[in-house]
Length: 205
Image (tube, rainbow, N blue to C red; front, side, top):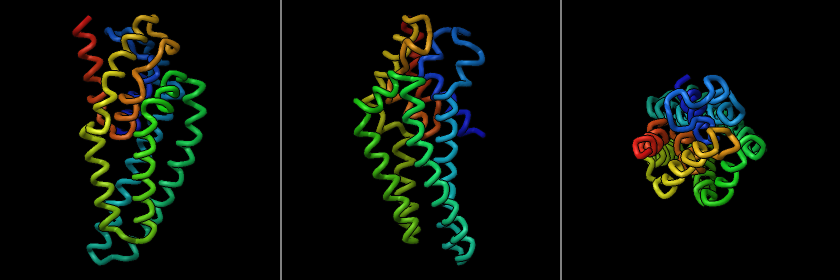
């Protein structure tokens, strides 16, 4: 449940539905909207895939090939479902959060490509039963994302996007915090890394 709700929070903030200020956004629509649901679903699937990779490695290490094969199949199935939903999500973002969509296909596009390449490499290693390498790659990507290192160049977009939403009265059409904050929270789950810059903006107001 935790990854899902972290993802919904990220989607709400990124789509400009959570402006700076106590109780400034809508108590329902700020969190229950297409972008939030997409973010929560993808966050849950990513965590499920990582869990399958780690459990596959652990089962193989403990000499339980049948159990490792089961977790491997679940990991591959989860990765396929994640890819399908991510592709479908392009249309969701384009319709529901156009400024976020613009950021993801613009400034953040290199990070999207890097993320996709890393994910495909991990899936390939899992498919070929190279569990040690698959676990190592997943662990590295998890650390990079959870530390926010990949998103540091895009963090200023979080503050400027929230300021834009505030200036537009907090409406979704006012814009979101940009691709950096949304991708960071969506991929890694630590909502604090998205909320922290917005808190700094609130202090500055």
